[in-house]
Image (cartoon, rainbow, N blue to C red):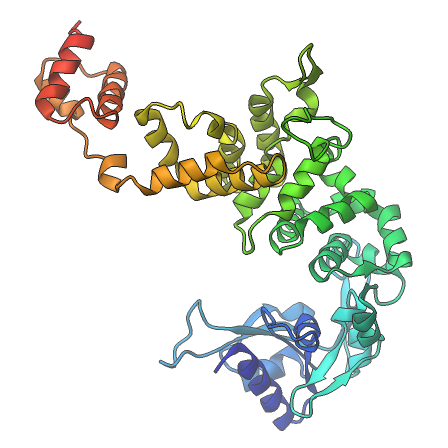
Length: 447
């Protein structure tokens, strides 16, 4: 049973029990657009306790808001993390949003139209009877799908006051589907953009990440700029506008234009860390811009950019693991200019960095968004591919125990000695343990 069949089965069982039940929201929108929904939601007039009685293994994740999850059984009859889970929500109306996210009070209802009118956008306010295939449209959502428009249900100021994140979601949906944001909705976002800070940083991060990785990042960030949300959330990107670059290396234009073109070349699907690394790779250019006698320069823009990217990652509550990879992408994106001149040991250490495929991908799209010369990308890719793992990561010739046996006192010096031995090994100058010990004796006399 696939996800859709599981959702239809839930609707059918609720109907047989005497309740109203429909597919609702994004899954209906995607089905009408001929897309495969990522997940399925069901709306019903059954109360949460009634839903849980029909489906005993339901997870009550938000019963106070009328929301429960129904997992799908695997073929073995058990539930696991890979099972499709359908969110089932009781028809309701929401009263008051003091925190700008959660309703102060929920009133359950038997009227599906009342439930739809609390939702965010018309294209997400459609109900589908999967048995008769009839669409219930109380908000002219099908018209907006046809017209390719993102429009709030009801007054946009009221909808955005309920949940400020909806402003970012409007941008994301407009970018994902290449739709226009309806003028009144757009104007409301511009007027309310400064209130986006009421939303948790984690939710903002996740929404921005979706804009970056869903395949239409350039359009999404243009909309973020036009609505004023970019100014509020990522002023470090906004100030890239008008920062000129040397035309011999960047014929495409200023740093903002270059960054948007780079986002346009992001692969799809794309990892979040690669997407953020691409967005932030030149974040250090605006504060380091200067016009030298020979050309425009950005002295130490990589070092400055790493510090700025670290602050952004901290601000948006990225995990340590993701932060480290994003900073590594920013820190190393200029090193490809030197790959032809690198010693073998340096090259091997470079290409065996964690997630090096992301570094390579970033270099490729950086080139495509500027001069278009992929020769260093091809050189790196081909040379790396020609190296077996035994050459790139050979077994160590010496260990700390070997140094102790040779009469060296343990201490911080060991790291330097072993690194020098590995460099010589990676360059092909050492093959045996005896040669390694001879090198150590010659270059690192015992103290």
